[in-house]
Length: 434
View 1 (cartoon, rainbow, N blue to C red):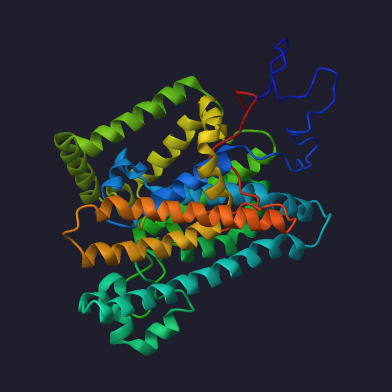
View 2: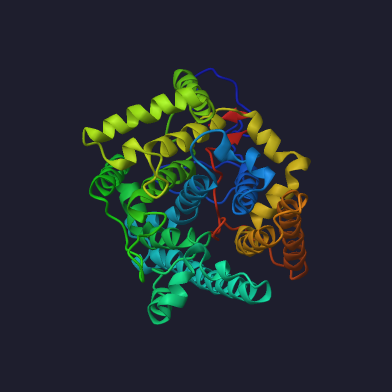
């Protein structure tokens, strides 16, 4: 936040002498700030989200009870997309801004995002083929025919030709391997969204809200092939949280907040989080609120207003993740916690996000298989998620050591692999909110 006249300089801000602090160089006269040291929340929150994805993708384990989805309506998927948007806003808005001001070619601005989308497309194909192989192998080895039906795999055996067509065009999706397709689509659209966000941020936000509303009302989505369903994470509704992240990232590059610090707003969002927790855990309150939402639906309100539908990014889920992000952004001690040595494993895993995302997905599917095959082994659900996290941590350490031996700086990646990612929340410098 801007310093008011007479306010003393805060640590981490430019000195009174006028010499700029190398750590924080805000935009001046429309220029994009150069690279700055990473806020510790960037990788700590990303690593935490990756841990929660791995845990939640092994249904039935006791560690699920301490992931974010148990304190309200949103889960790690919403965190993943808002982080992705913020990351793209910070990493890619400078090149787009240079094109808008005539300093470079359009392709120079667009190419990095599209190359990254292509990389993620390759990861998605590899993960899908790995999942098919893993469940098919398990069906034969453990004599469990249900492994050929689980997570939409039956489509592969019932209509193999169509499934093999649907796989490369991302319309044949395996359960628990269906986050990246929507992110890939949004990353392809990101250059145009960034252009709009830099030119007219509020118009861009209003347009994103309108598309989210209309997609919920008219049930717009990308159809699956083969099958009669649609994408699990609807790009036409999930674009809203991605666009909000982009706008936060653009403002973050300019050393500004998208939503100004306001203690009345902080109190209101904190109250909403407490209400969402009560709604989630008090049956009478939850039943009452859900009934009122159903009544609203009977009056013609779209499903993304009157349900908790994850596919549509329903309003309760959207409001919950935005409220959570805002509240955390108002708490300077969060930055100190993320910078603490105890958070180093989270930061390390977050810094190698693509590796951890891919490896964690495979480990989670393997854990599902083991828990289905051995349902009576009581310690297995306790052990497998922990083992998965430790394996991902070990892989991150190996990757980090390999990068250092090669003399190359480690380039942290978003959960799905965007370089130069941003923190989940606006930055805190020197213990002060900005």
